[in-house]
Every structure is written in C-alpha cells, then in structure tokens.
View (cartoon, rainbow, N blue to C red):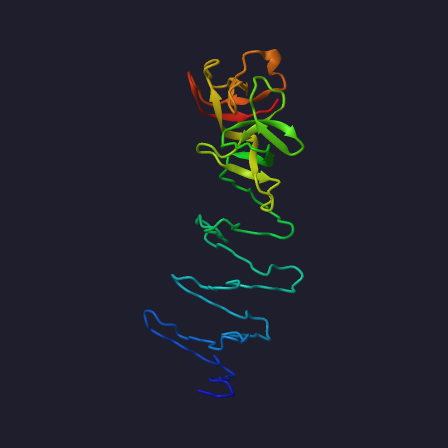
Length: 263
C-alpha cells in the first residue's frame, strides 16, 4: 500500500517487470481498481516505447478482451498511423463461418455507424428482399405494410383508390416474411416516413374479386383502396403496372408475394 508512490513498481532487464499467475477458477491474475469517482486516471496504463504491442492477450477459450462500460465506449481506439486501421479484426479460421467483426444493438439504434466512406472488397450479403426508399404519406392517412400507394406530390404518396392509376409508386415494404434489404433516404429526424419497395420481392395486398391471379400475372392498382388486381386491359395497364405475382390468389383479398416491376 502506498499513499503517494506506486503501489507496485517492477523493473527487469531480462524478464517481465511484473509476472502474475493464478489457478483460481474465477479470479483474475491481476485485478486493478481506480476507486476515485472524480478521477480521470486510467485503471491500467501501458506504454511500449519499442516496436511490440502495447497489449498482448492470448486465451484458449474465453474472450481475449472483455470490455464493458456504463457511460462511455467500452473500447476506444485511435491511431495516427497513415495506412492502418485504429481497430483491425481477423478471423484466421479458414473453415470457420464466424465473422471477424460482429456488432449487435438490442435497442432501436444502429448496430454500426460509419462517418466517411466504406470500402468492401467482397460481397455485401443482405437478408432483406427489396430495395426501398422512404416517402412521406399524405396527411390523415395510414398505410400498413403491403399497401399499394400512388404519387401525391414531391416526396409524398397516398393510398391508391382507383384502377389502372398511372401514378402508382410501389408497395409499402415489410409485410409477410419479407423485409427491406436497403432503405434509401433514411432520416430518423423525419417522422411519418414509410419504406416503399421499388425493386425486388415484397408482399402486396391483392384483391382477386376482379379476376383470379396466377403466377406471372401483371398487377395494377384497383378500386379497392391500397390493393392491387390482375391487369386485364393491356392498353390501360401501360404505365400502371406494379409488378408480377409470384403466387396465385383465386378469390378474395390477401397478401401475395410479388416481384416489383414498375412500368
């Protein structure tokens, strides 16, 4: 115990300055605590004035580094190096399927945030099914996922209400088992925005009371609000096609998976 100097001061010319070993099943070989609640000093400070790493950790089964914080970054990394990353992650198991870097947010915030360019040399694998873009919905209207909408002004849509409407813009994404893969024009500061599927697979509300729908049939807007129907009139369908049905619907109204194909 020390009141002013180091609690432990270790120097060696040939071996570790401090060497600690434990066989305890639950305690650390070295435990450090900074008990000054108003202090800004680190619990552990390391400096390497040579070319080796500042910290080297090796483990056989547990996490090499377990970092947790209640009020700040669990890990904060900075570098002034001109050509290397502040954090580098490598999975050296050629047969493994685990990611080199994994991030999960258990709330509503993003799992990752990048301020600057992102370079990807491999494939970007997305689990979603469509390319969507956010639009505002006309006042006093609501649109559940799968609803067919039409243009109503700059950056604004409304629920479709008439057949063969050439203002058709797309389908509100997120119905059934499909979720958007990419959402463009996403801004958390703008409320009341809906992701509109423009390309890809999406579940769409379809009314087959006008005509049965089969796989591959072209779909257009209908008189049923927010629903598509089979396009029977090629002349009126030009410019009003939403996409192609990927499943059949013989009667009534329901959700049908479609391939968005605006034309």
